[in-house]
Length: 345
Ligand code: CP3
Image 1 (cartoon, rainbow, N blue to C red):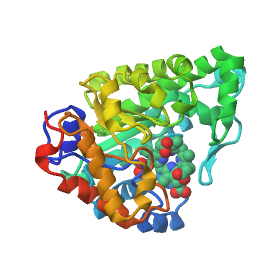
Image 2 (cartoon, rainbow, N blue to C red):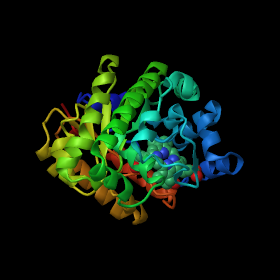
Image 3 (tube, rainbow, N blue to C red):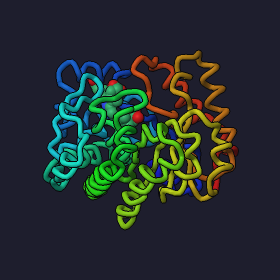
């Protein structure tokens, strides 16, 4: 069993640093683009054998140390009956902006609303065998609310911040409902076979520290606490949040995933030593030549060498235009990194 990813999450000794890539199944892969020519994105997510195929595509090509379920953070909002489309980003026909809308949201159990996710997980586990563990995931409540209130992805997400200042109690009521639904959704994934879970807080960085501590962190904490009894590692990824690192380190997760903006040794100095770290190569580095990629990847590994618990990853999702060769170079650099210097317990 290739368990170096799970071991690193728990800060146990590893033979080398594990590596996987956020958004590793996606448009930079020609085989994914081929699949998408035949199937619409939402149908792909909702059809277990196709979602399983997309999940496994990057692992057929690269010796990655973890798989991540092919789905999207907005998919479980099916449970609330919120209609959406993707083109390619999410679009929500009726953004949620009033107290009446929030009060009318009732989540069905994830097992009823998104049974295809559990089925896809069972299929992936069967096909993966011992090659690598499978990560399940969900969006953090504030990040999901940013999309739900705005109605689409938009830099700055003005609508959710307006609601936060105009009607804070309405936003809190929405965040509470999302947090309960995401706990149920992660439990479904873990019970179906996900061996670790990641909570994506892609838009937490638009909040100042005090607002993060009120409108983002508590709802993540409650999700983490609600899956603790299931005994799988929890990764909390915060994007764009160099000012949020100390606060985010208190979410209760086993691993903190950080964006590319802060050097990893500085992150390490700002959190407790018992928190494993994931990241954090700038995705744009993969547009550089191989020597630069090798240098940047080694630099990150050097910066936390000797600190137990590091998972190599990008500092945000891989970009669709990324050359495949660069991904290979990144992974090979991690694999070739001298074992003696890798993070050891
Ligand atoms: O390989 C994997 O990581 C698993 C699959 C995965 C997708 N989305 C597939 C996807 C995961 C983990 C996500 C998470 C996700 N989705 C996040 C958090 C991570 C992040 O990047 O911050 C967010 C914010 C979303 C919302 C979302 N979905 C956006 C903004 C977009 C459009 C932008 C883009 O990358 O195209 C999507 C669509 C989406 N999700 C695609 C994929 C492969 C592209 C859809 C297509 O094939 O046309």
